[in-house]
Length: 211
Image 1 (cartoon, rainbow, N blue to C red):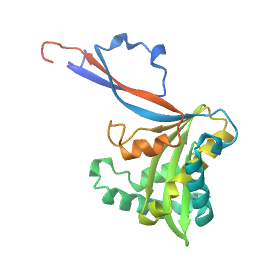
Image 2 (image 1 turned 90 degrees about the vertical axis):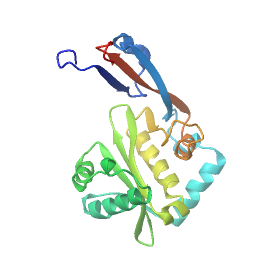
Image 3 (image 1 turned 180 degrees about the horizontal axis):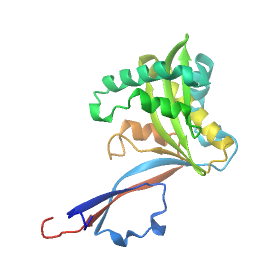
Image 4 (image 1 turned 60 degrees about the vertical axis):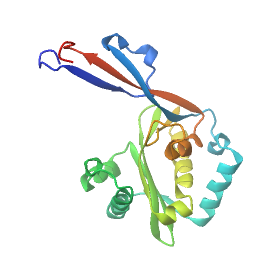
């Protein structure tokens, strides 16, 4: 950065990394911006992590919906549901993933799509990424029916189940759409979590006078 005459640098620090083991002296300022949700795996039975109401919703969705993992032939229908969901959310076009990104994820051994169907129609999906010890909630989408039948409850429970089978130690769900603790997405993810992590930004200032 100094060689390129960059005034300052902002570094996102993944919340699942232990900040006490990082060299944070390189930062002039460290800002805790939000919290993210995680599940520490301590049992081989995924539903032991959930309260009674969450278990009921998961089991009801399992009776009403058809669940399976995705294969390459699901590429278009998954991407179509994703685009429709992004449009409904009024998401900025900059954040859209194209068909090639989904094709890569479907072909990558360290990522999995979990699908929920109602009457043969795809109504929701979640995509998880896996490394050696942590699984990561990457992207998801649903429609009106998916929300009505609580498809995401079922899909997250299946992703946790797969994480257990893979020997994963932590499932990282991420945070909400905002930094507020009453954020609806954050509150939903907390239902599947037993641990909260701090999400930090590190600021390095190379030219303090200009900054």
